[in-house]
Image 1: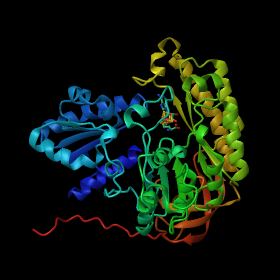
Image 2: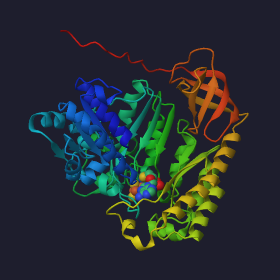
Image 3: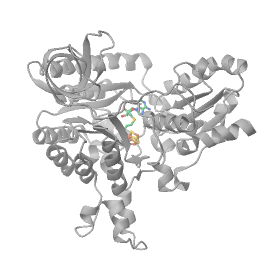
Image 4: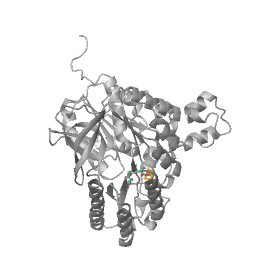
Amino acid sequence: MNENDSERIAGLLVEDGMVPTDSAEDADVIVLNTCCIRENADNKLYGALGNLKSLKADRPEVQILVGGCLAQKDKDLIQQRAGHVDVVMGTFNVHRTTELLAQARVEGPVMEVLEAAVLDENELFPTGLPTDRAVDYQSWVTIQVGCDNSCAFCIVPAVRGPEISKPFGDLVAEVEGLAADGVSEITLLGQNVNSYGRDLALRLRSADHHFEEREFERIAGAEWTHGDRRARPLFADLLRAVGSVEGIHRVRYTSPHPKDLRPEIIAAMAETDSVCEHLHLPLQSGSDTVLAAMHRGYTAERFLDKVRLARAAIDDLAITSDIIVGFPGETEQDFLGTLEVAAEVGFDAVYTFIYSPRPGTEAAEMVESFVDHAVAVERMERLRAVVERSSLRANQARIGRTDEVLVEGVSKRNPEMLTGRTRHNKLIHFPSSSKIRPGTYAKVEVTDASLNHMLGELIEITHPARHRTKIPVLAAGPQ
Ligand code: SAH
Ligand code: SF4
């Protein structure tokens, strides 16, 4: 989500006439787009701001902007702790980036942190905003902001507000625009993507709204105008709709919540060719006691049921997850439950986190039951060992198979090799004598596999890259 916001901020700055640079010394504007999901992020921000202090003292005209979740949460604390920051901007102020910088040039330090509720749809989902995409053939697509859940450990609802979905018709139009631009892989983004559309359906049902046909189509999609309008749009409908946009070759999404992973979503994944055979399903814990204390809304057995259903419906499915160790009150027995579920699923990869108390969240108050840090570290190592075994097994199981690869460029370690990602989102390197443009799809036979990557041999190119290559403009315009 933050990367997507960073691309939008960069896009606005470029449109305002700025040119990206790799070095802070050369910059006129430095943006620190923050995340506060775990503690480290705070520490990193204040560390980075400390490092920029002398630069700002030498060149006071340089502007420093702090945006993102931490800015939303800490507001004026940032300017109190780091007086050299020019702009503090919340998560709902991205569309105001250049205006706020201009205002600060005239008035001195400014802070603007809006709450979601005061924004209209165009400001929340600024489709019209230019983005400076990191690569030209892949794009994030934000389908929903905020979160209506209340997981005891999580700060997201406090900094990103309640769930608001982007209208269905607008999303399909956005994806069509991206495809016309040469994008072939999209990743649908939201905190709980499979509850996408719940708020839109409520809006459509509310008695005091009489929607004209065109407005109904924009919000819920044309397909339902004359059909069963109830509870539409659904995430499953969206997967099918964006997945059949011409030119879109791969659809990914993150993150679904296990409690809301309904059969129609699994069916849409199975039946839409472009939707990748990869499910990122955050487990968080394998202990029912801990899951209940976290308010996750499922048990270990329910989670395993969803995994079984998904595997039965989708051939050759990769499953990845997020797991937290050391949630307050987690006992050795609870942790063994997590190890068991992880081993039973045999995840392809897992992001593992040590629980980090976030101010204002329910779990942060459970101080008496905090798990000793050394114990949490040791559990994390044991969990990693289990996960690494299944990751390696999953990668080795590919040997001898042919995977579709989206080529991302020349390997950083070895210039003779190309690097790409399979539909499972696994990294693969393969030698190539001819130059292949990033964004090209190829068939590659897997010849070897280790924990974090695979090796292969190019079989054939299936789809050449379609996007235009950007030529950087270095010289200024007319004098
Ligand atoms: N909406 C997504 C998660 C977003 S946060 C979901 O529900 O799955 C990404 C991951 O960060 C979470 O899945 C969780 O594993 C981790 N995380 C969130 N808060 C955390 C905390 N306080 N301490 C440690 N890990 C945390
Ligand atoms: Fe946080 Fe839970 Fe919402 Fe995910 S679903 S963003 S973990 S509150």
